[in-house]
Length: 514
Image (cartoon, rainbow, N blue to C red):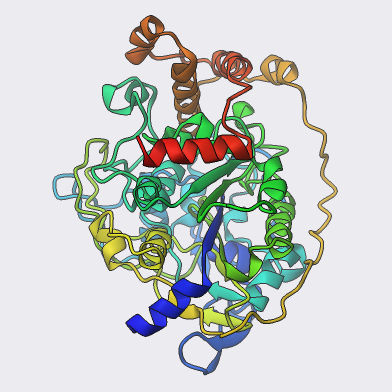
């Protein structure tokens, strides 16, 4: 991309909005879509790297039987969440229940074959009723919203999660092009440590700090009270706005240059994520379809549509099969204070869906370049003339060269409706949640949300109380205790100043003139 082309794009694109959903692989969501289009940058017609349903790939189960990929995925997994911690993904990618991994060097196993998704799911602590569901994807008719956007704009079929591991470190990469060495879901002991007392710290901070230094405003919109981005040092409650305000705010002057949207994770306190819209496997996938439709139509109807780049992607694969072997990559090169597996961060994770949306992009493109979540940062850094945060985003592909049209083209005002899953939509109350909480340990994902709750509690605590909280573990091993703790924190922090447009402007000036 020449400097002249970059300057032209910078004059046309003024806003970037990212919606990051949960735990779905590319093949699971779009592998059976059969999308064809123009290969970006070539003018040649082609097809996404998906699944040939007439000759589908397979995994072997523990009994040695072939489990073939099919396009009949259920809208929701009722009981067991597929594994996606560091070891789980290693089994999935190597096909070996006991993969050879040298913790001394942190070098990832070689000769990946993506053959272990079924056997890994079979050996989860909570035995799944049907281990074959990880080999099932959705037909286009069951995900009409995502498929319409993928055909109308740009679908990326080489977008990989940033590391072969779980949600939290992968989400950190979209904010900082690193996870600060975190290669696992945080433990209760880790959230009590001094390093995470004010939130997770990275050597060069986050993209939000970079934007503030450039005097560019930013915002986070969240679907519930405990968004994962609040775990970042430098992001506080008055930087996060309720998603229900998104429609109103985007119609006003001064909308931020960068906006990150977190979904509603539903009833994660119960461990099942029901009644949200994150598309977590234990929740109805159509909720995320409705959220995607709402975000697109809100941006499409706004005064900033013609100068906005909208990216919809997923944090990681959630344990679902994908047939494309993820490539190696560049390590961030920063310090690693949060390591458990001594991973060297030179291996990308499983492929995830990603759609890039703008009226300044040609219709129906397929982008086959390698991306990971740090490509969002590489794009922002190039668009707004900012330096890189780590070696990862410095080497990542950006996607500004997809902006090739001189004037906005016609695009749909509205999208098709989400499929009807016929699943219940009325959630239980908080009291019902606590009463129904199983008497079991706190899972790794819930621990992360407990950390966010502790950080919110710190914000409203007195100085003396903060000293007590700093090194304390806020809950024990009981899920019901975690539920009660987070319910109490929510009640104490329900009203946070700064969520109005005036409050956002005030926060902006506080950041840049501090």
